[in-house]
Length: 69
Image (cartoon, rainbow, N blue to C red):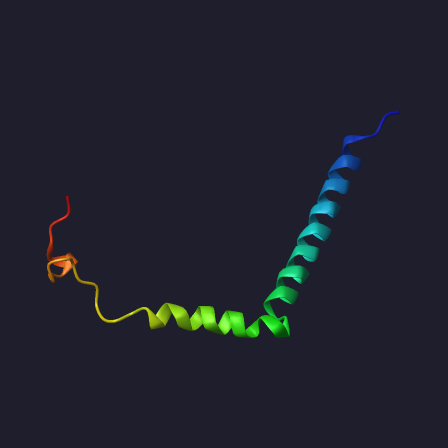
């Protein structure tokens, strides 16, 4: 049984295309799933809630004033 190289190339390109389309649809469905909206909103706001002010070193100095080592 002799299968030409072009058949394998066409099959792998088609499989890759359909794989990426299915992956994109799955990720989009996950991102817009209604019951996960609160989780995503909480994650988006939690990054901003941890900020108390500008970054400071242990002794209160600004880390950007220190020379690079």
